[in-house]
Amino acid sequence: MIFNIQKSIENNMANNAFCFNHVHYTYKEFAQVISDVRSELRNSLNEKEKTIGLITNDDVYTYASIIALWLEGKAYVPIHPDFPKERNEMVIEQAEIMTILDSSKELTNIGNGQVVSTLDLEKTTIDLTPVEISDNDLAYIFFTSGTTGTPKGVPISFKNLASFIDAFEDLNYVITNDDKCLQMFELTFDLSVISYLVPILNGACVYTIPKEEIKYSYIFELMEDYELTFALMVPSILHYLRPYFDEIDCPKMRYSLFCGEALPLDVTDEWSKCVPNATIANVYGPTECTIFCTEYTYNRIGENKTHNGVLAIGKDMSHTRTIVVDENNNEVNQGEEGELCLSGGQLTNGYWKNEAKNKEAFFDKVLDNDIIRFYRTGDLCSVDEDGDILYLGRVDFQAKIQGFRVELSEIEHHTKAELNKINVVARAFINNIHNTEIGLILETAEFDTKPLIEVLKTKLPHYMIPTQIKFVKNFPLNTNGKIDRKKLKELFE
Amino acid sequence: MEASAIKVRLKDVLVSILDHDNFELHDELTAKDVDGWDSLSHMMIITKIEEGFDIKFKLRDLNKLKNLGSLVSVIQAKI
Image (tube, rainbow over all chains, first blue to last red; front, side):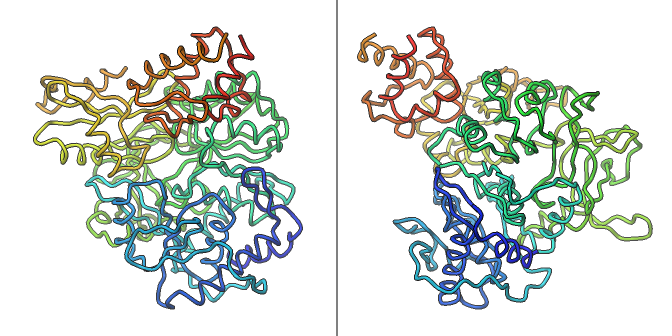
């Protein structure tokens, strides 16, 4: 795969590679910055360092740093400059990061290691030939919400990533160096990886969203002004755009993919008229199984498979094997519900230095005389007679906020730590524009929660901050004597 | 409508959605400067402004709203 990156860049030097805030960069310019960063890496990195921090700015230096690290056989760990310092430092410590690459004018001061500037480096000769890389070398580690207040790391190897790219190619989407592709994701979110990598592997151009812009309206302008042809989005963007669908007409769009949250059929039907010539697909997958691993193509003229109005997530891609199991890891019958489990070439080797979590989330199962390692997704699913997977809900207390995974217990953990002995429940609920928000319910008399929110903002990323707070004198209990979380959720509906 | 009159009404909208008035209304004010003004509340603020002034923003208008001054001029052009 790394050789293919080299080949693609070298074959498309005159083409545009990126567009940041209306400024284009050609692949030649991109190759130059990659080589400059690479030369700097060779000067400043210890050979043994394998995981390198990367401040996720929206510029050519940051994307070039990713490729430069890969050519050197190193993994990047994205560090969001707007996330709380405390959280970033937990990530740096866990991933044993000694070096952070930063393209900011004013360099970051987090962590105890060195910070290497990637801005305005000395020009070197273009060199995109990768060093020798073994399959198990890591390409990146992404940290996601953990239940106990500490984010957990998901390491993805070059082999995992190559497996994903191979399976993506098997979907037979035709992407060429004429394509213009949307990259709407923060680099701390793994959907960003396909959004820059697939264009780079095909010599196409990547369009990013400047940090200060309102995402949904900016996406629309990019789609219209630059006639984008490929876009992977989270469904919440559709909910934001829905009041304006009659203004959107993008006949040039060829592939419109959705991932990260449930995709309702009714919105998809309306959206299909905004992108009349596009293949629309619902793709699914957790970070643990490298970006996404199942695909369902929306049918424009016939019936679509749904559950509660939510589109099916379809069939496993070519390098993934899925099963649906009961509590004892036995496969359920076709049509019955159970937990979706994943295996195959895209699956991570396990959480970063977290044996306890690995024991919980992964298990071995004998299938067709082979021992296969499976990952429990926590997603409740069933499979129909054609082998299409229907998404039914979660088996635990995880929520998706604009595609980001949020463990509600992590929010409860930090709230409880702040409020002495007060009972707390965090719930995700659907607001009136059909997006998911986080509500917090406190078992106490009313008080001013501003200081609490201020503290949470120093512990949690912005998308995990509750947007509504309710007070309840006594939590309702269900028949088992447990807190009735369902009833509490109704407070927000 | 005078810009100053529009601003008075905008302040009411912001307070009603954001639940606080910890901001000074001036032309250079941006969402970033105001606590709680994120993409979610932005959507609610926009809807409330549309209702209050009886106007409808185009999707393209939304990207022109770089600061309070530009919001006032877009509203002025619509009413």
